[in-house]
Amino acid sequence: MASELEPALRFLEELERHHEPTLAAIRSHPFVTSVAGGNAHLEDLRRFSIAEYWYMRGGVKHFAVSIVNSPDLETQRFFHERLSGELEYLSRFRPFMEALGLTDSEMEQQSPPSEALNAVNYLFRLSVEGELLRRRWPGIWSGGFSRIHARRCGKGCPNITGYLGRR
Image (cartoon, rainbow, N blue to C red; front, side, top):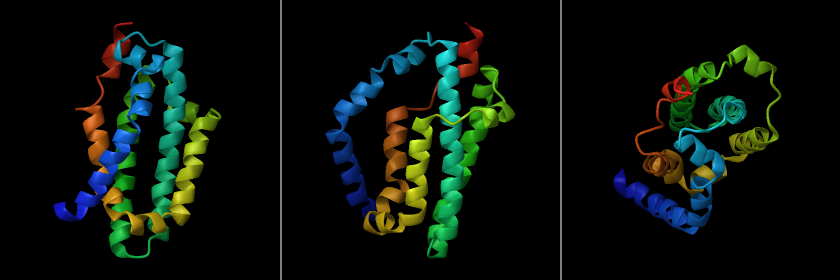
């Protein structure tokens, strides 16, 4: 299995090297540095939370549609695992929302931010047309992105509820 992933992992590492200036800009963005520094404004965190919620909801729908559009059982299992992960992430995100005073019903009443909709629309396009990409780069879909993301994020985010409790 590891040898099957090597070309995809090399591709992702090259992609990461190529986009290092963009990644550096993200890491130095004022919102990211304010969260890391523990001094983000609550309204900024609320806006982020609303956008993230709608992006995750779109991800849930993307993976569900991808299961339906999958050509075989193996691909359906792959997208089912991703759907389960997205639902788990959404449940782990709830304490963050609640710490900001937001509930699911309040989120549903919010208009999705255009940035979140742009990403969700792209995911839906992949849901319908993504089989071509999956056949071209199967290793990317089967774990390469997760490895890169895990390395970038380290062991996870600090306990945001504790952070908000200090404010």
